[in-house]
Length: 353
Image (cartoon, rainbow, N blue to C red):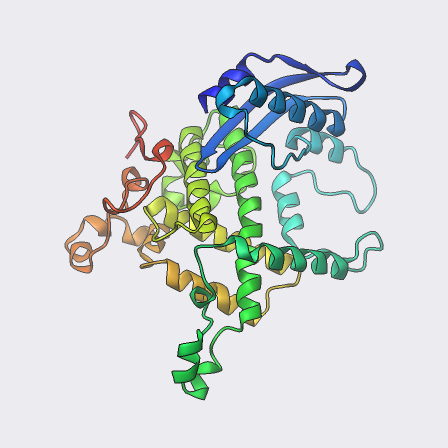
C-alpha cells in the first residue's frame, strides 16, 4: 500500500493523448493477499482520456518499483463522477429525463429494465448476464454445490424421494454461486463510492446529505459512528471476506462486521438477479441454503432491533452464548482461529463505543 500511495503522491498530472493533460485529484488504495484495488479520481476532458491516463500511470508506477515489477493490471474501468453526472442529467429535457435526486435515480436503476424501450433489449441483456454468472460460478472456490443445498451422490442415494424434491438443482446452485461473485464486484465498487463520499463530506452516514449506497443499510442505531475511517475498515473487511470466498481459504465468518458484510452481499445478489429477471424460486432457495450454511447464527439481526440492544451483555445473552455485538467489537475476531484483515482489526484510536 505504501509503495502504491507514495507513487501516486509523486504525480500531480498525467499527460494523455495528443498532449492532453489529466489532473490527478485523489486515490484510494486497498490491498488484499492477491493484489490491490485502486480507485483513482482524475479531471479529464473525456472518459477515454481518463482511462488511458490512469492505466498508463499505474503501469509506470509498477515498473518503477522493483517489488511490484511483476504485478499486472487485470482490469481498468472508468466512470463519470456522480456530481458531474448529476449536473449533466439535471440539464436533460423531456419526459424520460431522470429525477434530479440521486437517491431516486438509485431506486430507478434498481428496478428491472423496461423491455418496451426500443434501445434496450432486456431479454438479450439478461441472457448475457446469465452467461457471465454461470462462467464465474467456479470462482467461488470455497463453497461446493452442497453449500447451496445440492445433494451429493451419497446423500442422493440415501434420501427418500420426498426429501430429494426439496433439494436444490445443480443449475440453480451454479447460478447462485456466479451471482454472488458478480454481486461482489458491484458491492465493492459501490462501497468505494461510499468511502469517497464520506471522506469528501467529512461526516457520518447519519449526517451525510449525499446519498450512500450501503452504509445507510447497516444498523441505524450506530449511524453516527459510520464515518470515513469506519467505512474504509468495513470495505477492507468485505474485500478480505470475499477474497477468502474465491481463493478457497474460507472456513468461518470472523467477526460481526463480516456477518453484516455478508448480509449486504446477499441483498446485492438478490437485487441483481431480480433486476435481470433471473431470481426464480430455485435460485432463491439456493441462496437461502448458502446463508444457512455460512452463518453460524443470526444474532447480528438483533442489531437492527432496538429492543434487543445490549442483549449480548445481559444474563440472557450469556445463557444463549451470544457473542459481543457492541460497536467497538465489530472487527474483533470471535476467537483466535478467525482471520480479520490487519487494516480492519487495528482499532482506531479514540473510536466511539
